Amino acid sequence: MQLKGIFLLLSLGAFTSYYVYQPIPDKIEERWKLMLTDCFFRSLSHLADFSELLGLKDYMGVMMFITFAERVVPVSDQRVHVTEELFDGVEVVVYQPKLQGGDTELRRAVIYLHGGGWCLGSARMGPYDLLARQMVIDLNSVVVSVEYRLAPEHHFPVPYEDVYRVVKHFLQRVVLAQYTVDPGRIAVSGDSAGGNLAAAVSQQLQQDPEQQLQLKVQALLYPVLQALDLNTPSYQQNQNMPILPRTLMVRFWSEYFTSDKTFFRAMMTNTHNSPESAALLKFVNWSAFLPESYRGKYNYSAPVVALSAGGAGSDGPSRSIADPRASPLLVPDAALRSLPKAYVLTCEYDVLRDDGVMYAARLRRAGVEVTHEHYASGFHGALMFTVWPTDFLIGRTMTENFIKWLQHNL
Image 1 (spheres, rainbow, N blue to C red):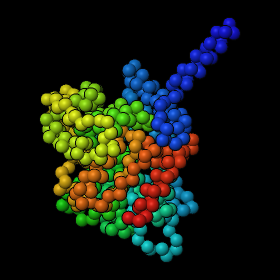
Image 2 (image 1 turned 90 degrees about the vertical axis):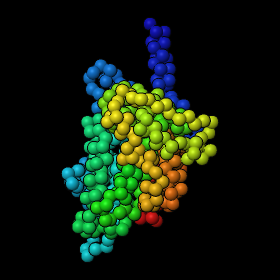
Image 3 (image 1 turned 120 degrees about the vertical axis):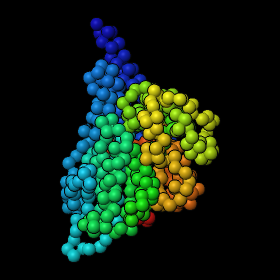
Image 4 (image 1 turned 45 degrees about the vertical axis):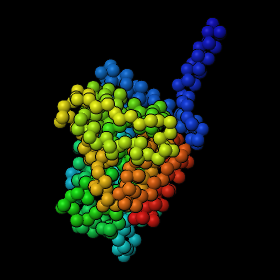
């Protein structure tokens, strides 16, 4: 009986070690902390798969636990005044410096868009609340954190349209005056899917004939920028990396567009392009836009074009992936030339690395001033890991450098 107990204990330990251990490159700091953090994410993902398989709750419904677990109630403190408001019907959390007597100085403003693959996340999560407060204090700025509606309940273009409405509403002189904001010092920024929305909004504002005020800068933090080629070198190199394995990023893309699982399967095999989207593959030809150091051992091969990708018609998701509001990397050079100064942050161990690298290269080629900050030991989502117990040194470093760039350029 005692031998059985020992065997069971050893088996349990071996299984736990096998499950927790994830090969992580030596260059990544605090590797064991990242392994344990990723173990939680993978466990929740497996539970979500199982729940969906049994028909209990859909995958993203289970994954929303992350959002709920980190949710906070944004409240004012001694230095920051916080209000929850509606901008053109969209929920926002507005952070402002506490006014001193007689203080009428015009301030910077940052419109911030949270990440989460358009399906998860919230402006009211602890890390985003902390980041907003830090920007208010360090930049003496107003921060508008947008609570856009999420997929799969609200497919594309609803999240984008929510964000665009907020930006348009805020960029009215009467509104800016209400918050004591300088019309010439406004930024839009976001991480991951939020970076996607920030890039798309920056582009569309430039083409809006009714828009008088424009953004001064755009800051894109490990942004996702295209859905045409999901087999770039970074997608291949980092397909099993924490915190965003390829399967999860592809699922985010799929859920953003449709609940049709056949489209997800087509995206997983990179066979989701229709003739319409295939015409735009020239803008994501990574052999042309990626420096050789990022291409590594991988050779470019154009994605397969299907007459009916994923079983979707011309009005379905195959058409949406070609929409620049979903894939900002797809616009021609002429549409990039008038864009505001850009900050692009990328991480080596991130499936989205090449999206950001290619966009920075194309912006520079179009004559836009770009600061591309690449973290050779970085991983996706690191900027948000600044709260115990998932507080990483690299997350704090990224935050400091990001805010420092805004201090000098906004």
